[in-house]
Image (cartoon, rainbow, N blue to C red; front, side, top):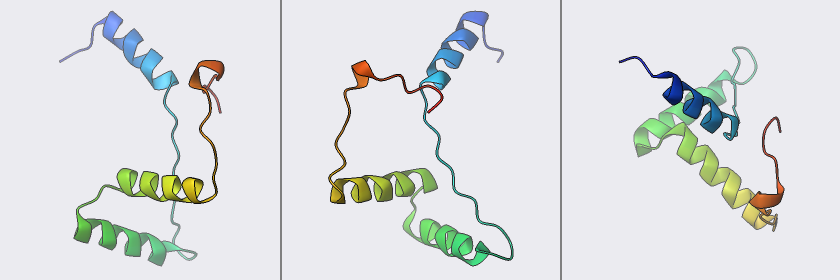
Length: 78
């Protein structure tokens, strides 16, 4: 089903508010860690996204990194 122009604009506006963080495991350097991660995720039924978000939140909480006031922040291109 094709999106309408209004839906495309809404999706683009929503995507501009999204923060993406990625990890990449390369052959010859750390591929075994990537395989280890995928095996763990499959055995626990977790998505990589939820697992990584949980790790990041736990680490930031442990370091007492405060939350920011979202109304005073422009998160685009950060």
